Length: 171
Image (cartoon, rainbow, N blue to C red; front, side):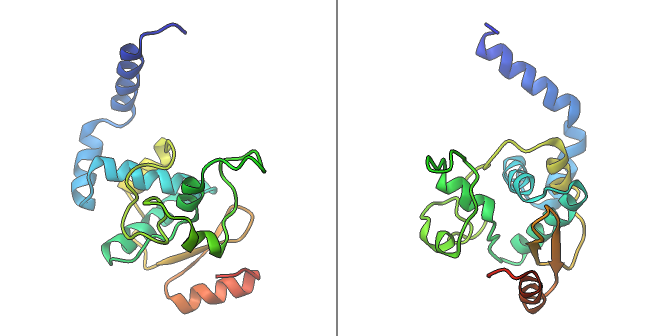
């Protein structure tokens, strides 16, 4: 309390360097072909998508593959971020609908925009950042929430649609 902003920023940078030294992230960033800013942006999406900690590297791997292949991320949390605070629910992170995917006009809506959004959608934790720096090498391109925080993963779009149908969800 009462600390000067410059001191707070300095403490945050010291903490970052302590927990994630440049020697750790520099090589991984170069290997991924992303800037550190892009890693943090993608990690913020992984942070919001992955409820189950063990799935973070898999989800990061899916997103990395999608980016490499020119696929759109199509991540619900980016739409939730773009929608912002909803006074009717009193929440920032509300469920999305198919209408939101196409109707929410924002550079953060990864259903309407290819690539990464212009910046992070939340403050990612260290485990989400590490998941992006060391993603699972996976053939998966899709995942769908089971509703309990975990996901079903799929290699093909057909498998993804079957997972959705199995869980009784819409596309």
